[in-house]
Image 1 (tube, rainbow, N blue to C red):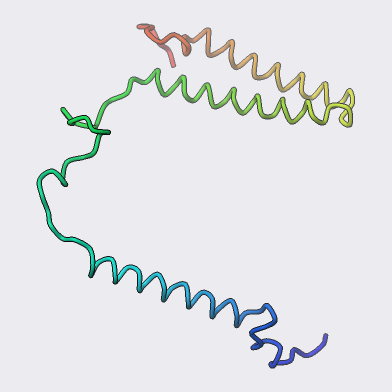
Image 2 (cartoon, rainbow, N blue to C red):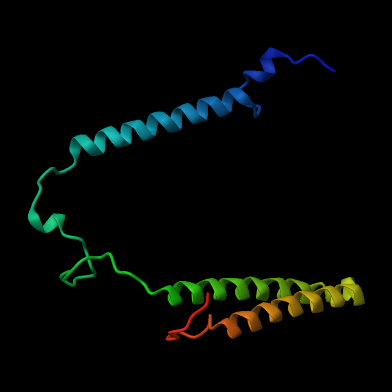
Length: 136
């Protein structure tokens, strides 16, 4: 191993730890100055209208804490699962020629397993929005 020369480490022209440390210090100082200036120069008047939540120009009525039904979240999760499946199938279709028949068989098995999952969800009533006898 060659010895490290200290003159190259502290050089502002060569990339190294010293220039990174100076840059980070300058960023932190700048952030501190901006935070101090905004708290010092900013307006401090508090009015009742400023305390209201902004709802795109609509006067809020009621609480913002709404309870979403469980089927809403289940459909969202199912959508994410099958959306990821679509991403895998698209990437597989791009590389289909290089994967050959082995890749085709693997993707067929992947789709088969996902199809079994969809049939299971459908049989249990996971896709029924207003079902009363939900088992999931």
